[in-house]
Image 1 (cartoon, helix red, strand yellow):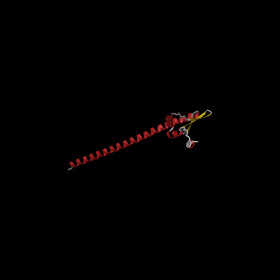
Image 2 (cartoon, rainbow, N blue to C red):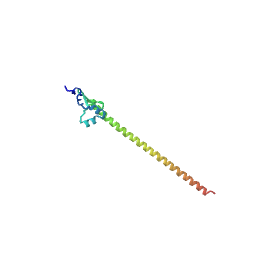
Image 3 (cartoon, rainbow, N blue to C red):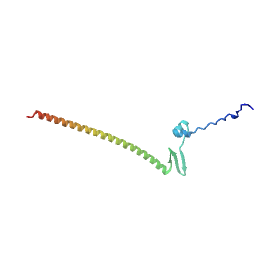
Image 4 (cartoon, one colour):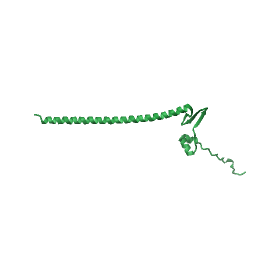
Length: 132
């Protein structure tokens, strides 16, 4: 029996498997797929001829009338967002044009007032010259 035995030496620790869920949760599935070269497919469930998939934290119908309705709703939502952005831009343009028109109107009124005061002063000067 040797004096210094290996009886108290620790066993080697097995290598851990790399947990991809942490990277996927922190950086997103696109980052995980790119960095780790793994292909993460969305979760799909099929109940008879009805199929749903879990994408971006939501269950989305993938087939049948509900799938077509969902796709139509997504298209209409995108169109609505686009129209709302266009409406906001047109409101902004209208406000800017209204401000510009107001400024020009005020300038024109000031010019007219200046011309009226100049003509009144010239009339007064003429009257002073021709006084008897």
